[in-house]
Structure formats: C-alpha cells, structure tokens
Length: 288
Image 1 (cartoon, rainbow, N blue to C red):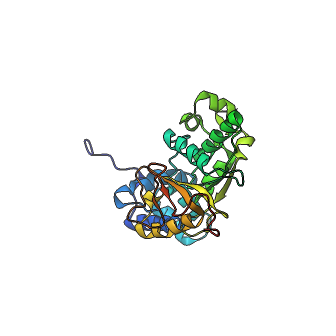
Image 2 (tube, helix red, strand yellow):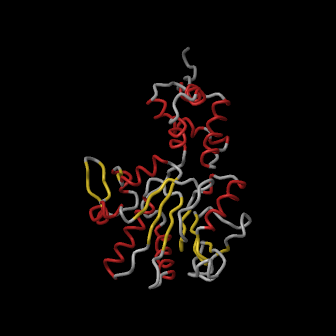
Image 3 (cartoon, rainbow, N blue to C red):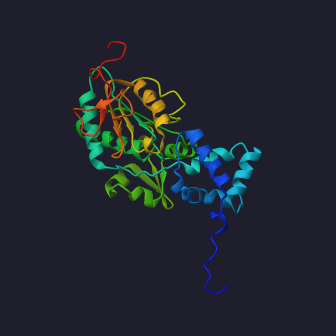
C-alpha cells in the first residue's frame, strides 16, 4: 500500500521464545548475558549463520538447535554471539603500565608470567609479544611467558592462525610494526611464526574450567566481566585469584571494578586502576 512503512526483513522477526533460548544458551555456555534492550544483537550477530544455513528467521535456527541433529550448531551460535571487540595495543597507556609491572615482577630466578583471560582473536596477547620482543632486542630484557585463553573455539583458532584483515591490522598498529611482524597474503596480514610462538593459546571457560597451570604475575581480564551477572562474577574471581602469585596484578577494563564484588583483590598502590592479590609481590603461595 502506498505510503505504508516497509516490513522488517525476515531475519529480524524472532519470537520471545527464540530470544529466550538463544540468550539462555549463551549464558549457560559462557556466563555472558544479553540485556533485553540489546536483543537486537542476536539478529546482527547471527545473520551470517542464517545465510550459511539458508534460514530466514532466528526461530528456524532455534528449531534446528532444539532438534539436536547437529551437535555443532550450539557452538556456532555461541561463537557468533560472544563479544569479540578488540584491537592491537588497545589503550596504549595500559601496555606501558604492564611493561612497568613486568619489570617490577622480574627476577633472575624465574620468568615473569602473563595470562590474557578473554583474548578474543589474539590482538591483545600478540601486542604484548611484540612489545616485549622489541624490548628484548633493544635492551636484552627477559621475555615474559604469555598465555592467552578465550571461551570461543573460533576466536582461539583465529588467534593461533594470526590472520587479520586490512581493517583489523590497522587498528592500533603503525606501519613499521605491520611490516616487522606480519606478512601479506592476498588482502590479509598474517603474523610471522616467530611472533605467534611467543603466545600459548588455549580454549577456556572462565566460569567452569580450571585456569592455566602455574601462577601468574599479571592477569589481563579486560572488558570481559562487563557481560557477566553478579553471581557469575563470584565464580570467576576465585578462579582468577587462584592462578595468581601473592601481590600479582589484575588488569581490568576501564569500566570494571572488584570493589563491592570480591575481597580476593584490593586496589593496587603501585599501578593506578589495577588490583592486586594480597601478599608480598613475587612470593609463591606455598612460601607465603
């Protein structure tokens, strides 16, 4: 009819039941929540999966999920819905602070250990690898051990491949670093093997899985807990704290805090905006 508003695209029509199933799946698998007013994210994030499966609506996708005939569909839905916003050297001043924290934690007796919890597609840990490799080349400073984890299998696979689009590589990297640490393959940029080998990538759920073995001096968990409920955070904080040395430094996002949520960490007196586990920095928990 002339002058009438156009109907929404088919893929934007989703029943409340479909929305509830998808948000419940995401929370059950990752602990992440999608607020009701942000349910539009479901359509935006899942459109590629709908196209791939030749489906028109989210309800059809949920039907396939509930039928259980494809065991991988749940994984693909979760991978699509997990927030993977990231960039190289995101918040440059944070990386300068981490370099200071590594210097403070270093000793001749052991190697400093860093854990990037929620590493997404790898830009954060690869940024750390570049930073410390360059410092090692310039000053001989020891390289820290870098472990990176994410709940998404797809994100970890991409991180291990070290393959980035022109758009992704330009977010945070100057030309000199692009040329020094990456090779071009078609329109993509691929991290050189020597860079990728500096990071141990692994798939891990912060809520339900055991943290990486050993104890860490620094843990980066930036803009991950924003999407978790208070109850879920109460499970994550002990997991992180158990993997840290006394006096270890926890780096969170600018809008995140531990205050009022846990007593396992306290505001750092050494590094502004960060948090520390109680105890003397550098001591092992067995010796404390």
